[in-house]
Image 1 (cartoon, rainbow, N blue to C red):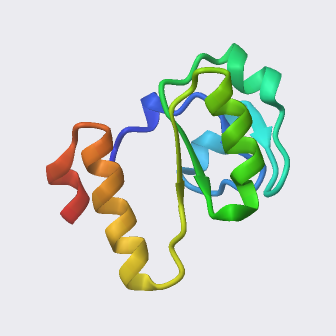
Image 2 (tube, helix red, strand yellow):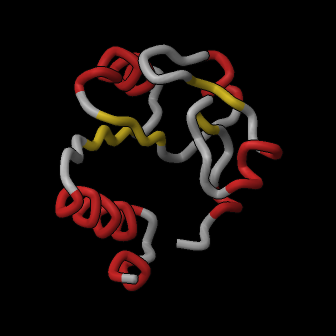
Length: 97
């Protein structure tokens, strides 16, 4: 979507955009997160995946952070997730590219 500047922290599994791996702090793995580091970055939105990250999401929500956990399991669901995310960040038109 071309919104890399808005990313403040990443998962250790992040591969795209490539520069994020070099420039952004790693604040989580797949089922664990450094909550204190995430909070210090003051994100306006944290994205996660599935019930596997529900505990992380709940802890961040209790700390006042907006969290959205997706559960995409197919290409169709991935494309829908992209459209939803585009709407969440006010870039609806970018969700269809």
